[in-house]
Length: 283
Ligand code: PMM
Image 1 (cartoon, rainbow, N blue to C red):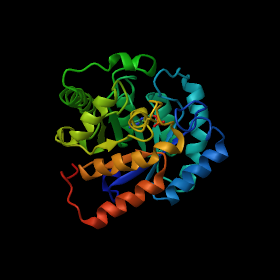
Image 2 (image 1 turned 45 degrees about the vertical axis):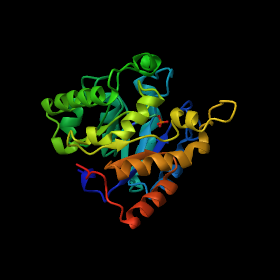
Image 3 (image 1 turned 60 degrees about the vertical axis):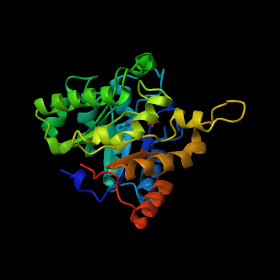
Image 4 (image 1 turned 90 degrees about the horizontal axis):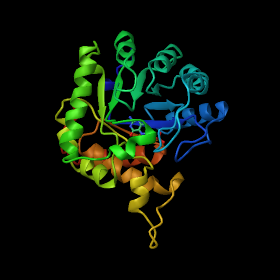
């Protein structure tokens, strides 16, 4: 099985949402051929992994059923795998993860960190694939109500630590676990920035960390116009995405998850060439 931890880091994961409604690229890659072509292009741009998702997780998004989710992602995963692209499946459902692995996916990216589906840990343990455990407090419809913290860094760290313990107890190997702070998931802009400033506290759990700021709404707020209108998603938050991704890598993140791969790969090349030390080594 692919050893993601052995990939030459920092790893850039390219986002491929095969959904009609994702917040920044919704609809663009709902067509199978367009989706496959985009995945192949992201690999050519330097993505070590392409993260295929069939259910939008934007705040307030309605859920799709497992059949529809599978119908969207499986043909795309099959074709990308056949083209030699390393694919992760972005799902909270064990049945979709299992089908995606059978179709050629080499890793599971679970925004619920195993909470949404009790079967997920069993599938991941049995398949022996890497598993991204993201910090999560509830599905999209209600997640912004759950953005309440006394100390966001300490609470996210403690909740992620519990997700890791549950994964290990279910038989998932420690060297298959990757953690993710889950920017924007039950977090407001101030929470996202606080977590970005304190990635070291999360890295001290001892696992590789994936950082996923790409085109998120807190960057739209940061870049709001003079009248306070947030900068729209699409390509207009990509420079801010690159900047936050490089900050994360410099702080010790193992990888970053982005829509626009090439600029992030270029920026990481600059960071590497500069010889600037990592503030903390990746676990
Ligand atoms: N964010 C989205 C979807 N999947 N997966 C991980 N591991 N971390 C994230 O922060 C994350 C994710 C949000 O939607 P998008 O696919 O449009 O970025």
